[in-house]
Image 1 (tube, helix red, strand yellow):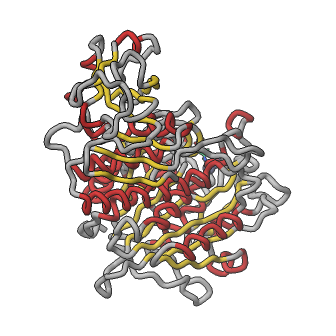
Image 2: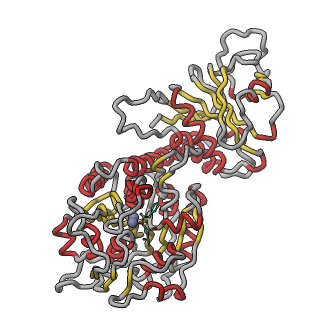
Image 3: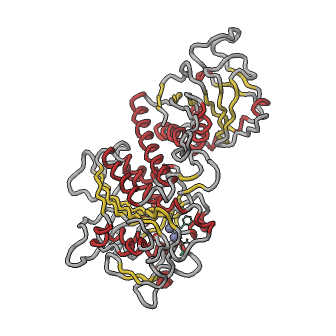
Length: 537
Ligand code: BES
Ligand code: ZN
Ligand code: ZN
């Protein structure tokens, strides 16, 4: 990740290779001036120009590149082109921001993301995007969005290439924020932590399933605990999983030669009132989803390394909690296994017993996420029953719980590939989660959970079956999970099947491949957490 520097002076520091200036689409057709404040302080040559004159660039030069000033469009031009002097850098990045009166933090983040991607071939960039931040915008949020955007856009997954591409971006200088140096430094430090958390989640999602095994994922969790302040980890191996009675995790793991893991994380803030209830996070951790005996189509198999994106988002968030200033205790639960069709795989029609003692008839082994999440939610919310006279690791009821899961193709059918679905049992908690997602710039939209649909999960032989009928698959998956949330615990379920993995091309701060969706929302949520009143039983 590049170093982020902030300068209160609104001038491009000397020696920067790339200077980024924002272009609102209202300016289409007009010759552009590099704002005077962004010019180099120590101009060389071009003596004709009096200091204070803007450097004009004829619109035709930009037009020739196909530039239309849409938010997230970037055109690179040598700074001498058409200008009557030098700007502060050899190259200027003209960054579209769309209509001037529609610039928001989300637009700034997106524009900065495209800029960050374009800036990878330069060693340093001065970012003047805040020049178009509208009045009334929160200065800290605007600065945070620009820093996050540039650093997230500069991300590239290169671990599997024999020769790393020559990305050079080492330093980002943000100019033109009205914030004083001290609060600006704090905003930047937080943004850097968030970006590192997102990058970790992206790396995990991008790593192929044959390489990021459950045991390897658990080792990454240990590494996070070793590095991040306030984080502790417990890794349960196969024997412990069996002893705990996590029947869903055992059932999904049966077709695999790789042992499952169950990871528990805990974050304790530096200062916390004793007895403060924790927020619980649960992440689906299917390191590869073949569908099991209900084998996926070849097409369906191609992206299924992404099926641990929920667990990756939770781990990414843990890695950044202290640096992001999270002041509430947090617990994390990651059921990790792949879903394979091996010789002793769970059969279609098998009945399994979960940690809370209830039973599920498995009528489709590809609906495996809910099976492993069921146990994890029961443990996380304190619903897990006594098994063999032994209580599975005692937990105090959490103040609230969020789970993240690449759970259903139906969520993609409903909302498209860029918007996650949120379902849950508590309106106030869902509202809080949605507000956090909005601030973080991650699209999230509600779907309903109604008792009326619950009979779709009725089984002829067990307490429930693991699929509904052909329709409303995201809802029946949510209703399945609801069975495992202890009464009175506010719960929000994020179905991130679409936005966790970008099968399309780079889009602003969101790259192709693993996106790290959820890390930003979780950190925004936890940094402003307010305990919702307990849900109705
Ligand atoms: N991991 C998939 C869901 C998924 C699909 C994630 C596409 C990302 C992209 C999940 O385990 C699954 O296969 N769900 C089934 C459920 C069905 C069998 C009831 C689905 O959505 O088809
Ligand atoms: Zn599946
Ligand atoms: Zn799955």
